[in-house]
Amino acid sequence: MSDHPALEAAVQSGCPVIPVFVQDASVDRLGAAPKWRLGLGLEHHAAALCAAGSRLILRSGPAREVLEALVEEVGAGAVYWMRAYDPEGVERDTQVKAALKDRGVEARSFEGHLMFEPWTVETKTGGFYKVYTPFWKAVKDRIVAEPLARPAQIPAPQDWPESESLDVWALGAEMRRGAEVVRPFVRLGEEAALGRLGAFMAQGVADYVEARNLPAVDGTSGLSENLSLGEITPRQCWHAGLRAREAGKAGAETFLKELVWREFAYHLMWHTPRILSDNWKEDWDAFPWNEDEERAEVIAWKQGRTGIPFVDAAMRELYVTGRMHNRGRMIVASYLTKHLMCHWRIGLRWFEDTLIDWDPASNAMGWQWAAGSGPDAAPYFRVFNPVSQLEKFDPDHAYMHRWIAEGTLKLSRDALRYFEAIPKSWTISPDDPYPDPVVDAAEGRKRALNAYENRDF
Image (cartoon, rainbow, N blue to C red):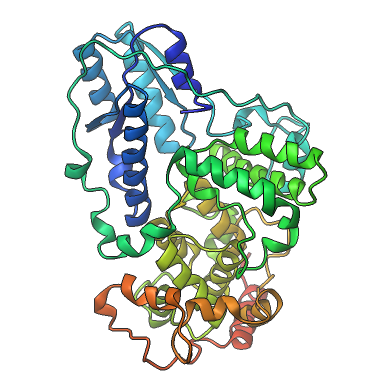
């Protein structure tokens, strides 16, 4: 409820405020993990609103129809919401705004999910940025508004409208038994997010430059989970980072750059929405990626059974925690798209289904960056070696042993949790032998480079 411009404007109007969440088609299409995490977030937020003397009203259906009906029901004079930037969200919100205004109802969207609105960041020639570093230089010295305080009171209506039930919505149904495994790793709600930010700035940011690359170390902020749902805002993170930089903490600027990397993803999604579904570099349409998700190599990748320890450890971390270390994300994406020569959309869809910190812009840009079809300024033929990467960033194999059980004498609890989370139909056991590589690291690199050298574009 803090740094929430739409809520603040509603409270400042002096009118009764009715908080509403609409389960529309975009919610229905969410993957298993992000939909489940959304349900947890809604439940927590509803409780926080109740503690503040308010409520969260739940309605389902097309947003325009739901809001028009609710406006009629309660006699609302205004509808305020936080702005969306994905093409579907933009189209929906544009239609809602036009319909409400036609009814004489004030309709306003507010900034807050980003620090820099995509249309406000332009190159000297008036276009949008296609490379991150110039984008960073363009925004790094901009003034970012101070975060808004939490409203002291949210005026309530005399009579509350009826609300649907989260239990009936069953947003977590597709997680099945995985929900119980992942739940202890969730940091839920605004207070937890702010606590996470405070702890990172007090203890973690000083070593962030190096620690963020070590998957066995808790060296990142972990805030992507909370940023994705608006449980914390980038402005809150930005100003905390600025204070840390002013205090001389070494990793603060790198943290600020990571926040701007997220902004860059939204910048590209806004200006080139094809990044969500098609090759951002359109000449990659001719590249001969495999798109068969039933291939044995793809199934092994999804199961964390490729025989490449860094890849498998990262994929199992995803199953147990709902998240994956950033270094691991780069390695598994590079291995799928380059060593296995599979289309990045396979990986994008898998993350879309399994990440509790799923974000449409960041997910799409990350996959296309790794595949070579996206906004990577480095040569497209860069291929991460998952074997040497493990030796470099996990030299004592602590990360590998934390997540891989097969062939290990002393099993970690987290490695065993993977077998509790996966579908029983996989019939995988910790007593199974660890698999041989489906594609050897050196062989896969050679095959990828050969394909790049003989490409038709």
